Amino acid sequence: MHVTSSTHKKDTDGDGLTDFQEWSSSSGGYVTNPREKDTDGDGLTDYEEIMVYGTDPLDWRDDIDKDNGWWDSDYDEVQYYKSRGIDDATIKQFLNNSDVDGDGIKDGSDIDPLEDLKVKITIKSVRITSNMDDSDDLLETIFDVTTDAETKSSSLFYIPVGVNYSVNISMVVDLNDMGIPGEYNNSISINVVDQDKGLEYKPLDIDGLPGIDVIKITPSGSYAKNNFDINSDCGNYSLSGPDGSIWFSIEDVSIPYS
Image 1 (cartoon, helix red, strand yellow):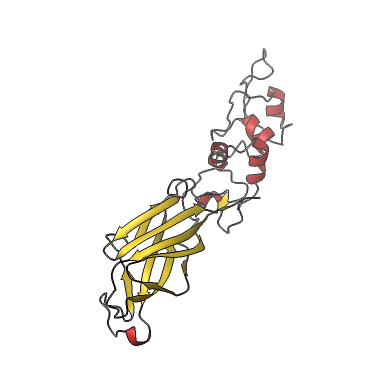
Image 2 (cartoon, rainbow, N blue to C red):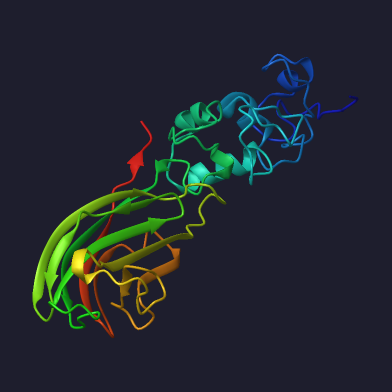
């Protein structure tokens, strides 16, 4: 590399490194351009790369921990963490850790690299107004919670028709952490299911499934959200449908990095 510098300035490009440091490789072993604040054009100044973050000022594609994924370079990673309020010293540590939150997904492919995403679903109560073709008006009911990552089911409840029934159960479920950092777009569904037992069992139910009826607690049947944003969609819910009503809450119980 052949570069020239000003004879009147110690730091021709004003990047914080003296011209001597830049062309003599006395800073981090790199020979950078004393007339360019950002020799590799990646958005980070030579000073930031060498003195702050420990990245390569000569390679815009530098990826120390090989975790870029949706990020083009360490610059994108730095900017993401800055947007989350992380200080420079901690960012330098993160640049050397491919899975900051320890959830098994590399940071550049993690919706939230700083948290292992989880929610707690609490079913508070239901009021089922349809007997679902059960002759005794006592429904053998379970609650299913499904995300992109897993499905969990409650134990069996015997719920009488036409009364407000207190359920008070909670299920903690994983969300799928894989995706573009910062774009929260998981899916969650809650199904209330009548499971016929004993004398109530019917070989073919009204929904075409033997021994199982989905109790419609929304106009479409179940609570379902395909673009669930954990930052804005948690809260208390009260829903009603053709077969009854449900009251539940969704709480963010994600595990932050440590």
